[in-house]
Length: 295
Length: 156
Image (cartoon, rainbow over all chains, first blue to last red; front, side, top):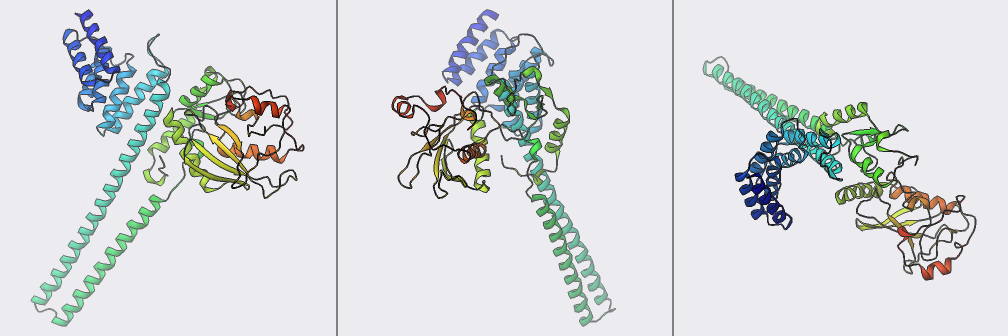
């Protein structure tokens, strides 16, 4: 059965390469019906389902594939496809966590001889960045929404206070405690005071918002000198400068030299820069829109 | 990879449209892969201050891992000459180590390239073409990046 499944999987791969996604999905499904313990068939079907934008199904295939290979097993492709599906379904938090798992598994494979493509580190690294940006943006939207509703709630409370005071004036008038003229004056006074309070409240929110939207450059020390993008996994060279791991690897593939000093430099010479990574993480976790969002 | 170069070029363009060192101006970058810059030399009698030199920069898809191709252009309107320099051929091809595959580093950028070329001109003392200029211009069919220049002279 496993043998027949492999044959169907190969046919699926061929269809996939030819862009026959619906055919490929069907072939993978048939393969799974014959033999359902091969995680690769699920990963491949997830990939084709991403192309067909069947996010939910793709997600399930990835989870199934990861379940078969074991949560701690090497399955970077499944985590990467899972991240893509999760991001498409607007779950940036989950997507980031899956993307980071994929990235870590490519950086430090769990099993010797894991099949890792030459471009995987770079591809996964930029996808991690994409998820971080999406998470950042979603938190920003959430904050604005919360802030918007807070303003509305406070305005509502002020209106209730106004109404209570106006009711009080009416009650005094009805009880004969004050006259018409005094009641009119009191009403005007209460309404004017309410108007001032609302204006003050709104200007406080406006000032705060302006401050929040004050464009602030992302500090240079958090930006990779090669891609000009904010870093998430910085590594340090021997002269103390840091770069994003994936882009520096890409440079070293072409020229085994330090980008600044041109001294010989190998991947083995690089060290993770944990301090800077913490600073990068702080940036990603920081109060959203005070940063320039120029991506 | 194409995504990386497009983003980086977009960011460089934003920077370059802001402020540039004196004597360096962006002419156009309508096509993100092909930029035109003008360079002036301020204090070298070999190059009149009112003369501008037009640079054409062509970026490969995996820029900045790979160097851009940078040449001087000869134009009649507006008039742009190819500056006289022992490392610049009369067809505009430049022999400068940082533009060569070996000498390039991804930390360079459009601005630093222009500054390097500007100072290469500013420091020049001889008003001549490289040896064998006529022969090179007549016979060369290679792209600048594929030429293996011999950097025999590190003074200039």
